[in-house]
Amino acid sequence: MNPGALDGLGYRGATVVITGGASGMGEAAARLLGELGATVHIADIAEPKVACASFTHCDLGDPASVSAATAKLRAVGPIDFLFPIAGVPPHAVGPLTCMQINYAGTRQFTEEMLPAVKDGGSVCLITSTAARGWLHHLAENLEIVALDPSDVRGYYEANPDKLRDGYSASKELLTVWIHQASIKLAEQRRIRLNGIAPCATGTAFMVESAKVLGQEFMDAYPHPLLGRMPTGEEQAWSLLLLSSPLNAAVTGAVLATDQGNVGGTITGALKPSYVRPS
Image (cartoon, rainbow, N blue to C red; front, side, top):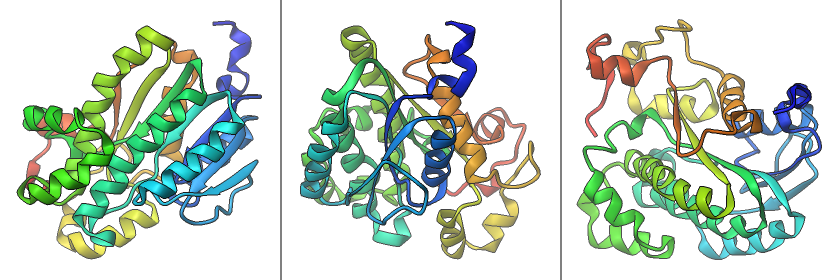
């Protein structure tokens, strides 16, 4: 990589499509991308406040809305970077709709946008520390990942016990899909597919979640590195650094941006009292 690529981290002059750019980490990422010189197109259910080249209404819970949005956004291609990073907590919409938005709708959006992503481009998603159990549910996760996104809602309607809270299952599926789908994309089109897995982050998402999780959970949640929740902007920088073409050899990776929480819990360095059962 030419050292000159450090200017803008490879985003200067690039065409970017991002979901979730109206709030939280998505809004922070959209703003930073603009500052790095990218042309940013935002898809969201709400109109963004951050400056962008275009806004497209998209409800990830509605497959028809997703298809309408992707049909419009494919026209802005070739796309250098795709960030399908919108997401919702289960208490805001219920477990089934949470699954539809976070996994099925996000995957539908991604797959329908891929024809417009240039060969050698990059796609990056957001999973969560809530996906820490993906290996424990691997057989089930692989079964569901093998389904077309349009069949996911029906699967969980027939198997409601497997839905759990909707959120952790959706993030596990994204994690498994990243690991699996990245290989074919790499071999056939040299597209990199990665994700970050944040911990509790200081955005409106977590403010609303705290009302449901309770103060005891919030007080017990460890922040060993920063001594506090990371900001949306701090998480957005990890997303952009991972996706930068400077990381040319990285695909199929899910980067833990969680202050060491999952690894520390697995190894016993952190007590798991803050973790709710999955």
